[in-house]
Image 1 (cartoon, rainbow, N blue to C red):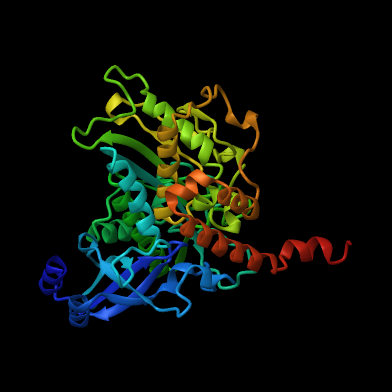
Image 2: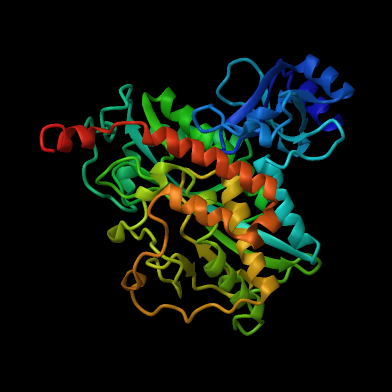
Length: 449
């Protein structure tokens, strides 16, 4: 831990936030005085209950919790990844944050850790001499403060003193309505080495998209994980909320986390998806074939919440409904941008912004890898609108979970313990959701049936 100790001494750090993403992508962990953390790490590691990794999004546990963790509910140990240490820019007191990996006492990794899951999939590529490259595009909404969950969300008031009610896709002045927010977002991201590329207004009212530069999948997921936390913190400091719900408002477009992905030769850096003269390689075609075959099974990994499925099918806002693929076709779930051979890639447009970035990226890389391994041929690329093919994605979480659990190739790659625990967590969330009586039911059924 020499690098961490040096960082703490150099920046006169008093406290350190030890962060670990849970299954939902929520930051869990501990805040520890810096000197105490260094003492703990010299001995073993930061202890944390194993049950943290089998929590639902509400903090509850599935009924079969004992099937996935030690029945004593004992500790695992957090090992900080020194490469991820950063300042926390919104505290007055010098505070650092660091992302951790989780291990048992025998130094084996915790299989329910989402960061480990992504590392595991990336390792499968590296074992073959390949390096996957990804670039997330993350959408979110700014909304007015809402303290009553029964009241629908509304757009916030901007600098003009008015709410944005129209759809101002790529509107410069619309972004500038919240310029003080985004100035702080950029400032805080720079201080944390979060490498965001561009920021633009999306189709929804006060909906924003941030693009990250392409790079290593684990580093990209770390940046998306930290960015979500940063955006929410900055927004609250400006009296609004930032939400990454997939479908936060009934009449507005959903928010996605599109993943651009390619594979390069580890030794040469050559893009393996295109020949020198710009033709598609067999690997590229098989990768798309794998996405087409296995993404429908992996849907809960990138559409993890009951709200996620409300986003699919908003046709006027380019929300996908199937796994058709096409060149520069935003109606398809899989879009191949026009590019030079060295930047040939495919964009997975299915994931929602509410997904855990580690699991979202892991799932799309896993599906593509299975396509390469099994030499799966894709369908013919779609000509015209992919909406003509109809919806082939699940309509709700329960169906998606059944399909996810039935895929033996995915379970073999991801690990059965991970798959079974993930299904159990999400099934518990769906059951909890099903106990809630909605305002729609009261409005339409109370006096009419």
